[in-house]
Length: 465
Image 1: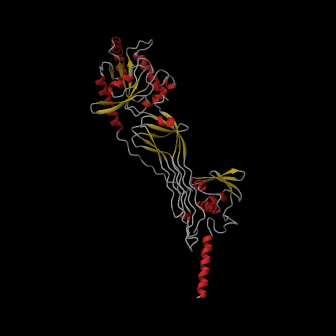
Image 2 (image 1 turned 120 degrees about the horizontal axis):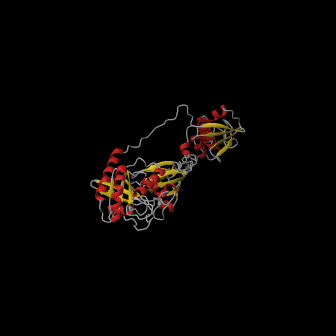
Image 3 (image 1 turned 135 degrees about the horizontal axis):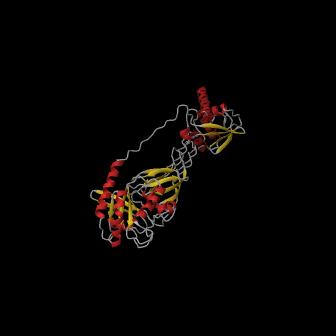
């Protein structure tokens, strides 16, 4: 990273909000002790979202605040009151931000104002007992827990979105060129490495408006870490055209325009991915007599090699107008070749009809591991301190076919089965809550007892009448 004012690579620790727990509640009124379940659902946790903002030009905020946490969903309440959803945390990033995982694999490339990426999804809210009630389970004495939100360790890398990229040795005049053709005001001095961050300028050439950026500190060996070029070469990856800015008046021993260009081309080749980009050559400082003489000497060889060569002076502004119009033509042609970006295409990949949505594997010693999005999510939502909730989980797993699959691969009652982070002794088709709640799994017999008592009172009243 270049310094406190410009940061183009950071680590982001994103944590989405947890879902709120569902509520267990029974409606109560006078003469109506169990009026039915009315526990509300928990709210969903907030997401962590990256959004491209054209007014943001650096990742500096993430350098000082690398941890981002969205808010949790609120738990449900009685009287069918659902918990509030957690608020999404929106993080604004510069145009051209690349998102990588902790291993360095690219996840997405954020280009274009308003482009969004959900860095971490919020956890689902748990269902309350009102949502879990049905004809068989009239008053569930349990609710589902909210899921934890996702956590992600991400690397954010900024690759400037510029049309023209300037490359050259330190003090070749890149910053001076940007300063005289745009409103940018980079630091300029007569010693090397005055530019410590990429400079970006907006240029108008006739009807064409384009951006120009430079790479600071590019010297031989930059692609392997020497100087500052390795940190900033990424900023010219998106450029439509590269411009060699050459100091024709340098008095350093062993330096001449042809040798400088050869050295820089070797670094660009070592970095990779830039070979197909068009090149222009700018011979700078022709206002100095021996600089103009050097430009006349090397010009024929450079024209033969690159085609277009421009002699300029950023001091007298000689040759700038033809250069800018030539760059505008190349940028316009490149934009026309790229065309209008296609709308994002959504690809649907339905699961095969024989895909059960889970897998079961024997791991030795009579143990088994169940993997799958649905069973793992169900386990996370289960309150294992509640016998009814455990019974409800067992019913869901049985309907999904987990018990059948365990039986087919040789699981015996009492075998250790692991789903997600939970391991338990498998007892197929066993009534949950023996000794506490007897009946169908995941049911509450209180409602049935009340219904039976009401029926008996009704029969007694009819007999007395």
